Length: 95
Image (cartoon, rainbow, N blue to C red; front, side, top):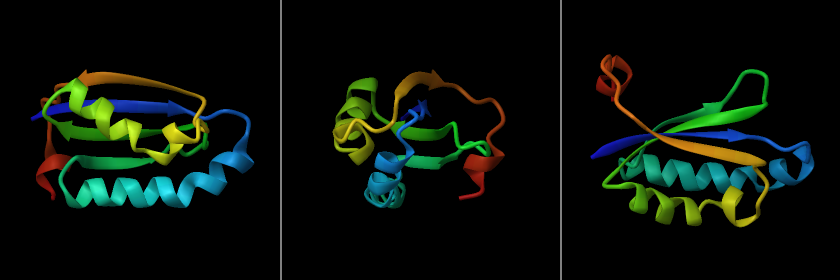
């Protein structure tokens, strides 16, 4: 499996994003149950969020992201995805 870090930067349209958030979180919870999401959560200042995925490839990640309500409803602002290669993994070992 390959790890990817996705960073969302939220737009100023908080109302639309918050309306979609319950479906977005349910989607992430399902992915976590299946092992595809290792960690997810907003930044303390609510300017965005970080999600760590464990998937076969970047193409597999793109398929998963296409099903994310934040992506479908275009409420997140911008996003960046990078492959992540941690060398300290205690957070990953805790599960």
